[in-house]
Length: 621
Image (tube, rainbow, N blue to C red; front, side, top):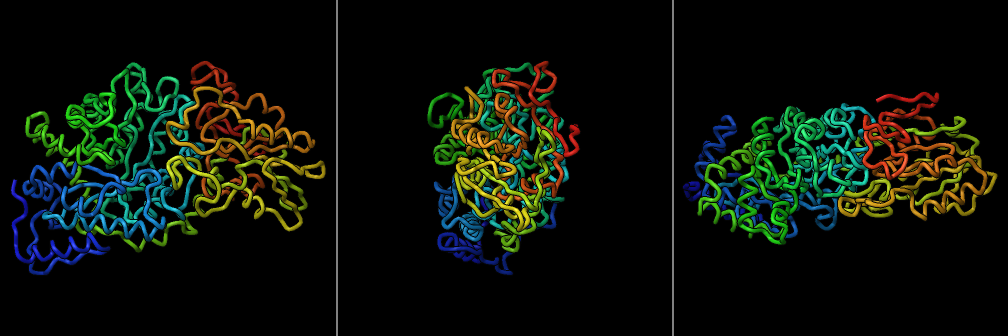
């Protein structure tokens, strides 16, 4: 198909845009004499614009739209040359310095590479903003999904989606790989904290975050494209193995794992990401029945389907893209392929497959129609560059206040012997211990600044210890020592903040024991030896095997992975906010019970939906 006709004014514009793409930010304004083509006319219906643009695109331009490369392996000139449709930041992949303005500058440079192409098709930039804009230092880090599931509050989650969208938009990014709609059925899985819970109805209710991310209209201010992931069944793999095999009859797959995606489609989610996992031995990245027939056909999904990081490279079990893998994945219904470093090879294979008839021109056009529709709906053709009016919202006081509210609402009180909680703010002497007490990295977990997360003050925020110190009156004393050294009987209470250290998928799987480690157990032993009552604040991405230690604790508060606003934990400890969270998952009596889920006949330590208030009454889900 022919590309846009060449005209002298457009040649000037192309040269100027290419120069800017290679040297800086900003984009030229088209000269007034340049007559708009139909696809450039915002007054026309989106389908009309898409059809006009498709008719002007060459095969190379269409294949480029289906290709996504990682920022460290792509230059603005590459986008211009190869007509790339998308760029992403992998976990921890960021410009230097890592701040909101640098992100916006980087985005504009990449976008100008796209605007320097003959048809000036803007690229779309993706990032894993899964609990806030978590790749960006200084962004507000909200609780991970498991904590939000404990709130049972879809409206709160919608508000978090809106705040996240504003911070994402302020850095130029216009596509987030969120929300994760997995229904977690085995807590051994290292991505358990990315799930809102073990029941499909709970996870489905939390798809309200999509409306927050995408806004009332994709064309509206600070609207970013949401992604329902990972399709389908990744929370139900055998033994909770990441990227493993979900062995279920179709009826159970549909009953447990499909409902959240159906609800996401109903809410208009713009993209769906395919899971690394398999269903009864067949990899999802090549599963035409589940993608084409069920998702696009039965559910009526009209957005575009994106692969996961090098996901199609797993189809044959060998390293490196092959033509057969590309053919299978694209024909199965994947519209955009995330090929972080191998994107040139993907382009070569897909072009050859189309030319040989392995992939039809109709399939290429369908993928492009889906991708271009979302780009038009987002208003990228009219507003391609970063909206810097939202840059100051990154880490703003209003967003941090919302995160603090979410942290407080996510706390689940599991034990409170003798009504030891809430703690008195005045006239108290409190000893705080545990390596998670003064560690924002540990409180935030994986997918925070880096992929697997980190330790210490990795991004600005309020640690749980600082929240405790800020909560008490001048007449109270707060002493902190991570290992518990120095505690004596003069203290009225010991608060132990401990649990898991950060992890993400792969490294986070726990196929063996699921209890506290030696460091935490030693800290608890030191505290107990003092005779001081012990309140445990458990920072973890899932329930842990703590039944043997629980009798020694006077109180237990499940804090999940609260993020940067640790004052929300202190709000509950001191009664400024009541504990209202209820368990989004069943809490095992021992690791040998895994998988354990509501209604399976196993007796949990704490059942799904359990949570105490300060009157001692259990809550309900």
